[in-house]
Image (cartoon, rainbow, N blue to C red; front, side):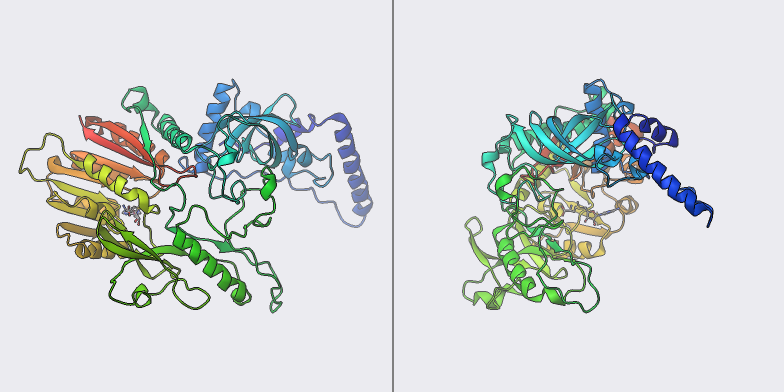
Length: 581
Ligand SMILES: C[S@@+](CC[C@H](N)C(=O)[O-])C[C@H]1O[C@@H](n2cnc3c(N)ncnc32)[C@H](O)[C@@H]1O
């Protein structure tokens, strides 16, 4: 992050305002001063306080933190420096004439034509360079949501930050060869914030996710990359379902401010956030309305039963919205039940989203592989216990707790993890152990338990551990032990021989901490499989482990591969395998 702007730079920029506009500003300012002078006889004039930009501290591996690396990469490519693209925020913050058409604010926040999109961020947005309209001769980095490298576009710049500006895409003038608008079937695409890639072929999406991983290692693991310790990133594994795969969605609504007891006239929109105020999709401009939250009738990424649930909950909300005092989020979570065909279906479904007749909605699905019939329902109660089927195993967990969100790809991921946990050159009869750090409700522990003598899982949430124990039991798995506590608690109790133990890491987005990594290196397991929903913190942790821990230097990165848990979006899950050299 660059330092906040100083008073000196604020005054420097004032001289850069075109003369006619500056004159107008000076005149208005002079007018203000005269009025103040007349008033001065009554009370001494107060010196206006200079407002300063307060930079938000971004965690380097968060989307905002990663953006700084992406901006630097763009600048390096175009022989520019941060100084050459820094915006004068002090001038905007202290602009005395914000509303005037010629104000500094309105010079910055303007429509720009003929903008060439030059790069794509890991957040799925385009990046472009604009001429700075106030600090002449300077450039600006501009974020263009739904802009693709190779597009020439028209944008509206609406917000400025020290190193970049935000914009809305108004028109695509020349299309990038990557752009296939004909693939878009989702009427909310290009407006809603949930998906960024529906206009790309699926092969292109997978390729982009592979480069996101490669860039993450470039930015966050530069030393091991320079030393040739990171192999080429493998191809991203496709999701069997590319739409209708999400098993959990959380639409929300806001309520307008109103005086107590004043009734709400109109049902507010219920759906997902709008990504700025884009206008490029002319045919669907008004779809979903134009509020910060769009009114979403169906979600292209959610499973079929969640869309049935969404319709039910929207109908209920349309009747009951007057009962709400403030905005809220509604949970829709898929639940799977194995049907006993000799019994009445409704009796077996448990609680779930109901249709207009009061029946729990469900969809029947045949599972020929296991010879069963399943019923899918949509659960809305955070605390209700739900079930998912993965690889023939049943997993129970509370609807509001973490569980992987794309059921269709889970058998591929669990198999890949299981295969990569194998200790090479093992002899027949040698024991094999597994440690599952950040184990949640036991997905990887249970799916990797066959052929292993013992599995030890550790997890900070006592509720999840209770479910991990229950899931092992339900599935007849008897070789799993689970510990409640921080991941490093594992090393207080672990008794399996390190040479025969493989470790799974699946931390939250922020990654593992240094204490855990150091203890992991001291324990010195035979293999490590690191699964991550934030490849940037994964790359940081892998470099830390190899370079900063005592025995990390004995390991190599055997492979890094993405799994596409979230088709049509920029997200990618990454699996990195470390083995001892
Ligand atoms: C990405 S989830 C993975 C869960 C599980 N592996 C799965 O696939 O279902 C991360 C898990 O780490 C747990 N967690 C967060 N911080 C932790 C810590 N310091 N020690 C142990 N577990 C932690 C969370 O409660 C969450 O269940």
